[in-house]
Image (cartoon, rainbow, N blue to C red; front, side, top):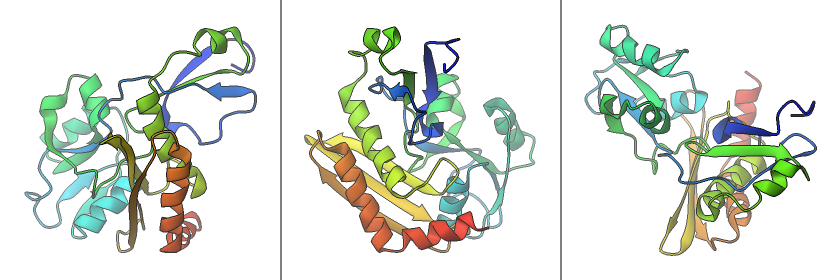
Length: 237
């Protein structure tokens, strides 16, 4: 984009830094948003035996799993979705944690054994949403200026504002879940130590047209409970 080779970049929003590159703009988030929740494939959480081997490559998922089930043996995994699922059928893992969005887009929803409750297992900020990035004041920016879904955009802006206030990124165990209910924007979030032993949570609501304010407010509540110390400990390991 900086060299002019492309005019538009489509991202998985959860992987995009909260500060975009200089000279570029993140457009209003398109809708509809795919399911932002995480899912368990291979077993339900309650049915996993003590010491079961569960695969995931995300620090947030590791932390949240151990907060719920400290007995689990969480195994780091990489690779594409079919390859990860195959580890459960071949017996090397009892279950894997994946994003519902990816499974839905690949037509693999039947592989889901349990949808994890986002109230206790909040997803990555922006999960399930797309981010459309353009050069500021470009023809593409003008052409696409009226696209997007304001309702989806408000939810993800609240989530990303919270993440920015915590100085986090996609590799830290911060979960956030924004949604519209009864004409209000609701946001719940959690910061969890990687070993799952310490977790702080906060939730609240605000006007739909002030998503960043809500994100900053909930982030402040997390910081007041010790979120900065949890994240500092992770960054120094």
